[in-house]
Length: 149
Image 1 (cartoon, one colour):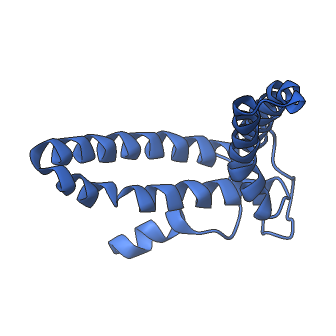
Image 2 (tube, helix red, strand yellow):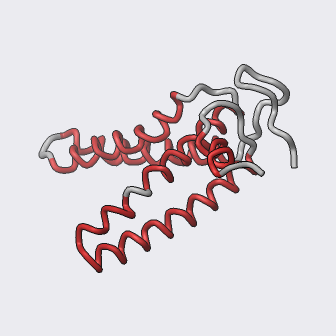
Image 3 (cartoon, one colour):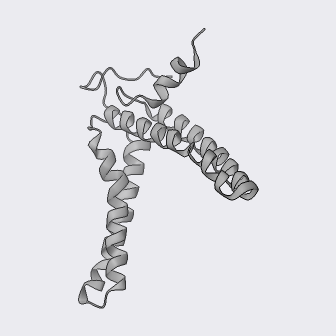
């Protein structure tokens, strides 16, 4: 029987490829894990204020698993891991820039809605890229095609 560490290793692996089905299964699991950690954090905070930080630390492995499955999904699409930085940080950077322009009194305020729209488009592109587009057929530089189930 495999140990717990052996069972968890694939969840946090950044190498290899993940199919669309693997990605969506992981997303459901991560959503449930996030809900559990959030519930524990709220209950611990209500019980003792700073105690909420203890279960809150469990968000770190949930985040790491989410990034890992997204990177493996990008690999299945034939894209390098740095695209994850574009998909994760890009919308926040564009939104932050847009909100900064809204706060100012310049003519650049007209660009703010366009930046906000670009942030939304980038988020939508990431969602489609990771969750819906077919992976590369056959072997690619990141490994063999994931087994079909």
